[in-house]
Every structure is written in structure tokens, then in C-alpha cells.
Image 1: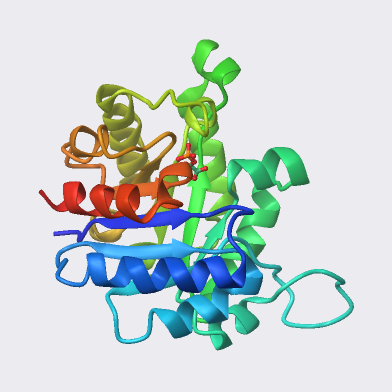
Image 2: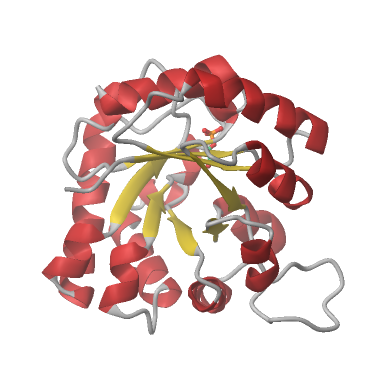
Length: 252
Ligand code: PGA
């Protein structure tokens, strides 16, 4: 059985001070939660503070991106080793905002996945189609291309540890979530592809979580599908109450 994961992607929100305040409050609200892996992904600058504030709690910390080189003349970038040393255990890779606003390609995602594993981080690899692609019936072709390109060279053992986040681009930040049926269908497709490419055992252990306008009132229905192993939450992860409610309803 896969333990569901609920990860909060804060994007470019919250200062170091805001982060510490959130974690102090949030950790007491979720302290008795078992059976759900809880993760928060603050901006780079607050990762270490989040780790310190979450010490000895059931909350893990993620970065939102990384650069694949170990070190060097790459102004503005942060390596996997630096993230791991700061105490984070996860890293989000290939979020659609990185792809559309910052030109990230599947080849870049692939290098980042390798770098994350190299530093012992769990990659949360985002994939998903745009509205145009969905309307042209290209959803599965897009997902296949993103999985194949992004996870090229990943071993079965690594896949078992990896998290895939299915995030239809049209559902991100729009208030328009995929219906449970749409999410379930896409997740089942992804699982089938992972089985074909990495073997049944690895694919069964790999988490496939849903992202895109997840809220307290739609999470329970979304995670009811056996192939939906939790959620990547943007906007609703910024509020202690809403994010905690999503965690509670994931377990129920
Ligand atoms: P949202 O963002 O929950 O605000 O739609 C999800 C994401 O971008 O990961």
C-alpha cells in the first residue's frame, strides 16, 4: 500500500518569518496525523528555516527546483547537494510554471531528476497537458512524452521512490480542478505506462499525486480513486487551516 502524500507548493510566497510562523502553527494542528506524508515546499531562502521549525514533527520539507550541476559558475542556481544539506528531503521538478515561464524542457527535467537522486532527494516530477492539448486529444501523448523524456535512465528502484505529480495545466491556479473521473483516468494511464516501462513492482510503489486547484472540499473525492496517491497543493497550502483540512480529508 502506498501512503498518500500531501505536498504544499508555496511557489513565490512567504518570507522566512512567514514560513517559521506557519510551521509552528501547522505542526501542532497536524501532530496526531498518521498515514499521510506531509510535505511543504517553501522558496529556497526559507528551506532551512522550515527544516528547523519542522524538526521532530511529521512534516517534511521540499525545495521547488534545483540545478543539476554540483557547484560552479551558475549565478542564481542551487544544487541538489545544497538542498539536501539544508535538510530538505524532496524537490519539485518540472512544474508547469518552470516549463512555461522559464523554458524548462523534458531534457532539463531529466538532468534534474538524476541530480536529485544523486543527492538522496526524492523528486516530485510534475507532468500535465495544457487545455489546447486536452482539446486536441493529445493528453496521453503529452504525458507519455513527459514521462519518457523526464524519467529517461531512471532505474526501477529509483522509480519506486519517485513521486509523479499529474497537474493538468488548465487546472493550476484556475479554481477549475480536474473532475475525479478525469484525474482517475489520467492517473490510471500514467500507472499503466510506468508498469510497461519500469515493471509492475516499481510502478506499484511509485506515488502518482494530483495537482491543480485542490481544495478542502474536493480532496476527498479526488483521492478516492485507487491510483490517486495524494495531492500537490498550491494556493490552498498557504493557509494553515485549509492545508490541514486537506491533510485530514486525504486520510479519511
Ligand atoms: P493550485 O496549484 O493548487 O494553486 O492550483 C497547484 C500547483 O501548481 O502545484
